[in-house]
Length: 158
Image (cartoon, rainbow, N blue to C red; front, side, top):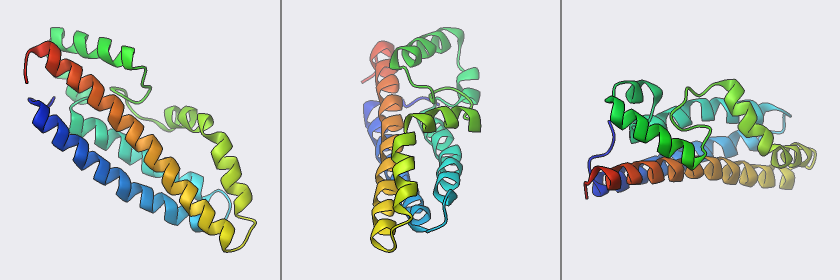
């Protein structure tokens, strides 16, 4: 269900940011492992759970949108389209995440090269993994927040 007030929307954003920080820590742990490719597989697995969880909290998961009345659905889809997010309101699949991952491929290529440098490279890799996961998660939260805030504003609620 969509947030009913700005206060509720802010609380959801804060809860989701805490969730992102926890998942980013998991990503950092996987990134610190010296085995090539483990971090990428872990990041995809984390995102496959994280993005739908954020969508669900904001009320913009596909199954939630399907239950809204026609006018609300139309307004929501227009706002999502304007936001330009590929992860908002859609079923999140490995294929969709692969497209998002391709945009961050340069970062991941650099992470793989750092695995060849013992200890310092692994620590740097963990920091990059944390920052990258946090960036993707918080960007998605910002997109969800903006869409839901516009829905509140257009719906006449506080």
